View 1 (cartoon, rainbow, N blue to C red):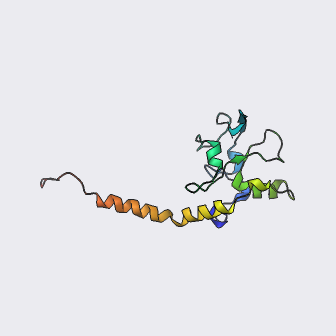
View 2 (cartoon, rainbow, N blue to C red):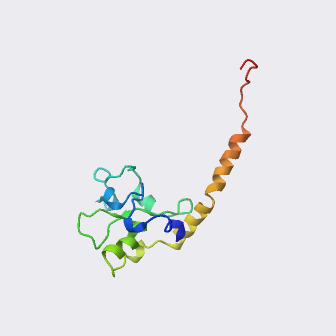
View 3 (cartoon, rainbow, N blue to C red):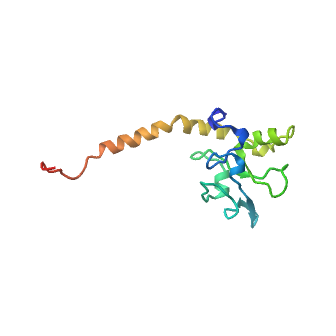
Length: 146
């Protein structure tokens, strides 16, 4: 699980999944509309708040194995800010111990392995892009005067 930045990110501060500021600084409000859960972007606050589709973001797949989305904590009072899924263990330990988060909200091996692959390959993709840019020579001629 080190690929979820457990060594470098202090999950006990419940960092925001968008900006990494501690949870009291960012608030996420969930809404249910036509039976579908989503973020209420008009009531949520974060310096890096950007709209995203909750369903696809919460469903890890090969190209994007991350399923970190704000979720409602079943033990927190109504109206409490949502907790980012990857912070749930730390949240429960700090605020609801000995209760545990729901098993369906646990981080899966698929996510951990997929994030590990992305992390391990992060520099490879950048090197390929640099190589592609170097191959392209300018299509203009610089005069001797310049």
